Image 1 (cartoon, one colour):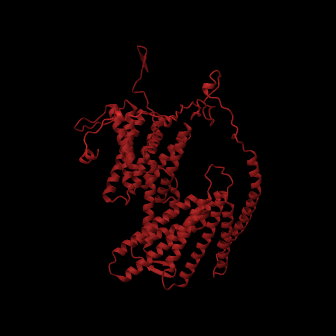
Image 2 (cartoon, helix red, strand yellow):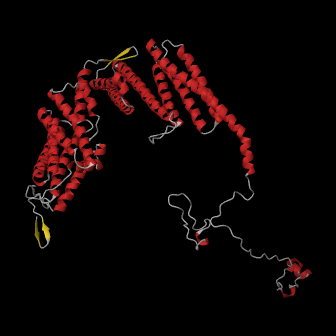
Image 3 (cartoon, rainbow, N blue to C red):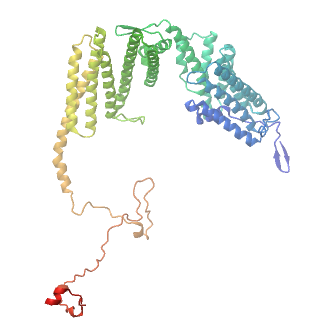
Length: 592
């Protein structure tokens, strides 16, 4: 640094720029669409950001005719030139990811375009890394190198080739972020650790493809639980691999077995969808299901519903194109009915999981984490859904004429479950009346719930294969109904005993002048006192500036004049002053 005329002059050759690359990209991505996986919005933001950078640097590419201007080492006199390269790389990457996440997946032409955009992203990222190595400080250079390595690995990951090179690039980026996560501010350390967690599944997948890992293909779905933009391409690739594996397994799935009936499956898409739903059902019922959280189970149920809906859509399209083939239509209608029944069963299971979550919150006396406690009305609504679903399943099976033994037992099972749901609904409806202080209604509903429970228990116990879990739940519900009924009865008697005391206390405090109020002085009445008129800060007291609405004041009335002399006055006759009529008829002239 030199000094001329008392002002410091910076030597451009020795000055080093500093960019927090990861923090800059993360904030831009989260604020402009990638929080919701909206790559189109983020790409448009990158375009607008580049336009602003070009104009502010006066680095536009000509007017009217495009004139290419390259960014070289000699051009980089401002840190914004490096920002241009960074946003160019991220814009190309976001455009590729936009094509990757199309609803039906990219076709062959779109995939070629996708790979071209990723090559552009690698080109700009490498140039950014090279210029940061010359013009940036050591930390900026390391972050730029990690960013370029990640882009190279992403390109090779999408190309399905050179897995060793892709693994090397992902490992290099991960190692850099691991080292950077040990230094700097707390916020920067957290960002680096999150980035390491996002890169770890890609590294493990590359190891699996290279053959250096014992990880099975079915276990790959468990390593993509971390959320982040860096994992989107990995999840898309993983979903494609799992779909390919399902399509190979679906070749052996030729029939769908349901309640003693076997329905042929001829459509390949229907097979894949049903197979996907069955795999998720196995995961929910397997030995590892107990370790799953409620949120994870709910997300798995959503995937099951999506798979069954896709299967039903394929079946409906096959029905529309079946024409006059009666045998094919019968099989497709039976398959549609079986898939609908499976969907209804999973819906009841999902609602039962929601009920268990709501009950655990309902039983809490106070909430320690600040979560909203469950009201009994919410449980009543959930049981309404359960009653409707069980009724639909019962009607679906019992609507046909000749039922086999499995269908008969299925219909009886869901008939009993519907009665049990009615008893539970009645119990929580009584709870809602109890919370509202309506003791008579609550007592009656608890009595009704107890009678429903006893009725269901008798039917379940005489069944062929009684459900022990259902019997245990009904016995607990019966005990709860009896205890709550006694509590409501006792509480109602106590409240009735206290009514005369409350009445006498209320009558004794009645005053003809109304309740005594503290005299309040308003601002105009205490101008000589230094007291606030708007209340203390943080309190809910009303300001005492002026009384509003103002009080009524007595005002004098206008006098009332009653004219009572009018009827006693005798007025003089005015007949002589009145004009006489000179025109008279013939008869008036004769008889005057």
